[in-house]
Length: 257
Length: 178
Image 1 (tube, rainbow over the protein chains, first blue to last red):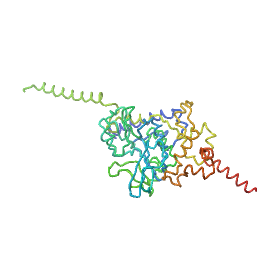
Image 2 (tube, each protein chain N blue to C red):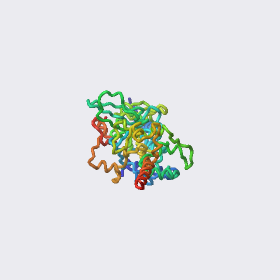
Image 3 (cartoon, chains in turn purple, green):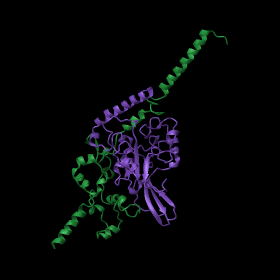
Image 4 (cartoon, rainbow over the protein chains, first blue to last red):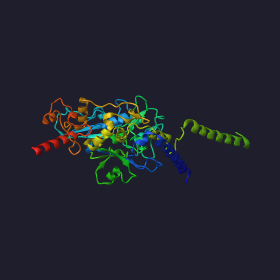
């Protein structure tokens, strides 16, 4: 064992140990049953984890429950969205009309009236952080305030961020924003604080049709493992950018970007 | 320059000392603790991100204190819907196993608006195998009820077909009896 791996192992132990002490004594936490097996009450091996998010576009009904849950979970200021739902309308001339009033927070109550041609297809596309393996936002951060954690999450260090907004420009998926209250960059974390407590992300938890799926690839009984192992057609957004996202879309038309 | 051996040795040693001391100072004063364990960032930030308190509980703690609603909700078609979507977050209601606030209950027209978030047929994007959709006010006309009716006057909000199935059973019994 060399020095690097020794330091890593010791630090893993302290991180896992500290969580192990804090979480079971949290009181309220005991009432909530575990949703992702193999996390709670165990040493969290941060170097040996892989999580995957799958959005099934064919099941999304555009209710906006995920957007509401997201706003409530993080108290996201008005006008900014960690996750949002887009409505794609496809005309018979192959013209694409995309809109997302209020990021889908109020749901989609009315059809679009400003389209003159005949509509061929309408569908909803939920958007959130793609958790890229090669994240452009991490590469450009000058102070190391955003990083890819060893378990594959792209996270923010609010204490180190200087608010230069480089990462906001770098993100090909536009999931980052500058929080007008804290003045630092903010992004979707796939609810890292919930995942580490064995719970599903808030948007997955409230989705009524199961269009959003989340799970560990290390658990062979999880739904996402079965989907990724199966023959279903899965796509990622902007593959040509070489970001290797961990967010997959099921049933996405080629127009979705 | 003509320096003695001892003086040269002193200069070398001094410069090594200044460099190591400077490096040591740089590491201790400018770099935060736990920087560089996994990469060029503060690894304590991972722990901090993991310890953020949650705001959404699941349905399970709701069902614990509201067994009447739980019984209806679990049997109905709306069982996949999270309590918190309509009523608000667990963290606004309970803290340390004590009630800290009352969550709002939707009333009258708010209920219809809420139902139509998912069940509106006008948005031609909702598939029949995923969700049952209707269009307003055609649905009210088809069912021969007043145009001012709200959804919850026929449908139980937690189990939408509860009263519908019951009414059907009664009419079947009446037809069989007559």
